[in-house]
Structures are given as C-alpha cells and as structure tokens.
Length: 621
Image (tube, rainbow, N blue to C red; front, side):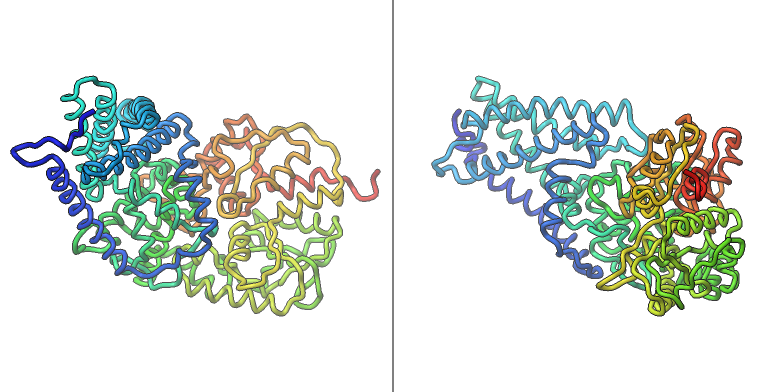
C-alpha cells in the first residue's frame, strides 16, 4: 500500500492536512474536557483514592470483562465484542495517526503487519455483527427505558463507519479505494473524538473512571452535609455520575418505584445531574426545578439501581443529599415528619413509651436477661417493629424461645434500646441518626457482651457498617445464627410435610450485605422445597418499605405497590409459603397478599416461626 499522506490535496501535503484535522479534533476535545474538570474541581471533595488493588480488580472485571452486562447474555456479549473492537481500533488508530503525522518514521502502518491486519479484519466483521444485534435490540425489540435517540443512532452509525472503512481498506486491491478508505477512517475517528465529550456517549470515556472510583462499601452513605441542590453542593463523584451514565435504562428496569408507577426515574435523575455538569452556568439547582420532591421521596433506598448499573453509578447518594436539603427546608410529608418526631422523642417510630418496648416478653415462660445488669454472650437488638407491632410479636417470641431452647446466653437492653437510625439516615435526618446511634452506643457501653444479633436487616446494616469506629463486635443476622444452631444440632427438628416455599431476599440483608445463603440453608434444613422467584439474590425485588417509604403515603396514580408485585411473583413459583427474614417484609407482604387476593394461595411466614413449628419437643427421642 502506498503511503496515504504522501500525496497532496489543493497543493497541501496530506500529512499537513492530517495535522490540521488532528489539531482541530484535539482542541475541541480538550476544551470540553477542561470545562468538565473545572466543574468537578469546584464541587465538594470526596476521597476515592484508597484501596487501589481492589479498585484495579473491579476495573479489570467490569471494564475489560463487562461483567454486569453479561447477565443479559445476548446483548451483553454483543456489547463486550463492541467494546473490544473499539479498544483494538482505538489502539491501531493511535498507531496509524502517529505514522501519518510523522511519515518519516521507519515503521509500517498497522494494517501493514500481517497478524494485526488479520485481527482488524476479524474484529471488524464480528463488531459489525454485534452492532446489528445492538441495533435490533434498540429499534426492533427495545426493553423498557431504552431510548431510540438521535444521539444513540449517530453513535451506532459512527462506530459502523469506523469498522467498514477499515474493512474496505483491508479487503480492496485498489490503491485509490484504499487511500480514500484510510482517510475516511481517520476523519471519522477524529470527528468521533471531537464529538464524544459533547454527546451522551461521553460515557465511553468516563465510565472506566466511574468503575475505578466506585464505592467499595455496602450501602455507602455520603459524608454529613446540609444537603445539596446546586451544582457546587454535590461532591465531584456525585456529579461524575452524569458523565458516566450510558442511559441504558437498566436502573429504571430494576427500580421498584418505576415498576409501581411512582414518579421516580433513576435514569432521569442522573440525566439531570449530567445537565447540571454540562451547562456553563446552571440557572437552577436539582430540586425542585429539575427533579420534584415527590420523585426524591419515591425512593425506597433498595440500591437495585446501583446494583445493576454497568458503569457503577451511585444514585442513592444523590437522593440522600437532596433529601437532606428537603428535610432542612421542611418539605416533607406530615406523616413522615411525625415519625421523625417519634424517633427523637421516644426512640422508636411508633410513638410509644420506651418502657413498653419489652412488653412482648411478658407472656414468655422464662425471663430474658437484662444486658445492662448481667454479662451475656449475645446481645439481641430486637428492633422497633419486632418489639411494638402486634402482628410481629409472635415471631419475636418464637425467636426468643428458639434461642432459649438452643442454650444461647443472650439478653436484651429493654427500655434502653433505641431505633437503630438506619431509616432516619436514609430519610435525610443525619443529625437524628447520630443522636440515636449515640444513645445506643451508650447503652452498649453499659452492657457486657461478645456479639450482637438482630432479625431486622435495617438495624443489622447500621450496626454492622455505621456504628462502630475501629474495633467492633461481630454482628449477626438471626438467619445466620439459626443456620449455625441448626448445623450444630442444637435445635433438633421433627420431619414435616414437603411444602414448597419461596424466599424473599431483603435489600438490606442481601444487596447491602451479601447475606444470601444462611436463610436458604435454614429453609432447606427444615425440609421445605425451595422454589426461587425469577428476581432473587442480588436481583431481588424490593418490598417498598425502605428509606422511610413504609411511613409515607402512596403516590397518586400508583399502578400497584411493590409488595403486591412481589407476592404475585411469589405465587407464580407454585409455592404455598413466602418465607421472610425481615420484620418489615412480614408486615408488607401480609398486607399485600390481602390486597392482591392471594390469601388462599400464599401464606407469609417468618423464618423463626417455621423453625419453631418443626422443633422437636423437649425430652422426646
């Protein structure tokens, strides 16, 4: 092949034209990127430079391996091929560009090397096939929330033009055609480079950094602040979400609020963050000009959006910042405000005297130790709902009897226990969370114990991840403890009917803390046939109670509550039992089976109650 930059056009050498095109492309690219960097630098600081080995592993697996996309095998594989084709072509383009800019270099063009030429040909062909799959999915069989925008169409055309121009240049025997294909290829890529920072496909450049600087902690919370609405009030990482977003809609498809017909759209939220970053001088902040308070309050903080995001965007910190601002301004439902007042005044969401917190123990045949007065091994943090809600007290007493039967050395804090503050914090009341936390830590300090156990996943998450600085006691969920006690033979069982059961993974136990196996181990030990729902494990569908939603009114126009959607999924498995390991789930699903008309088909049962039902009587062989 003759050198495509040796010729001249309008009397100007080809290599000089290439210099001009390159300079123009890089200037446009640099100008836009400099603006983005200036905006991010003006935002609040946030430390994301720690634990480099973990971050590098995340980067390799989720950027080079595209792990999160592969849960949808067809489009995930197509995207993986497109990514690697893009990477290979970007590398060889850089080589070809340097060779064209400096024609005196004693190196061939990349397609002048046989094995590289073959690799380019293979990736052009499979890349075009993958593009066809992507186009069919977007324009013929689009999933919900995947847009058919002009920008997306243009990007597909540009990628196809890059691959086709390369393929033509490789396959043709005509020098004229090869030269024109080379120039077309270079012009398209340089144009692509200049255009990217101005388009939604900025994510091609930003998403690898989004993955690398993603959160490494479960249920990570933004540092205390007065909330945020204006651009400079957010942290740089929160603003970076907008640049990394691919607008693929996976977050919306996973969101229980979207599925239920509530006004929230995680994708639209991040798009508004993107607009905040891209505008030269934003005339308005995020809330209420771009996103309404109703949208912010619709979130159940289940983290399904972040779990499925292939670029590791973090929607919840943005929502929490906005909620903090709304709480400070008093833009909050009366019922939710009443709950916060109850937290502050009584230490629980029920507005009940702390002296009645342990009233549920009165009908037990034994006395539970007071952890403030006697040393114990296990401090049982019972939680509000398990203590005060009459619908749950039978399950609470069942757990107490199981602990007693297993010979567990345990106790409770009685009236000294306060709400863990997990929900108050997700509502946006950081100060109230700190108050509840300090009161509980003071009570812990007066008790002598080795481990903490709780049946409440919300309390579990707060106690395990947000309470103790430095050395902390082990925190167990009751399902972990029951699985261990059953495994040790300390809770002997009688055989029971081979009933089919399905299990709901609570968001704060599963997605937030990766506790999936212990509850299933208990169910299997009981001899129940486990039939999983399609959305289970990390993809579990939220009941809708988290983030304070359990105390909020339903949004107008609600199609159906998340809990109703979930119990219908459970019924479709053919199971007659829906097993739960969260007090709020028991309340939400018992109500949902009634409103969904499933009372005759599906019983909602707590894990501890099921174990007690099959417990062998004391003294029996």
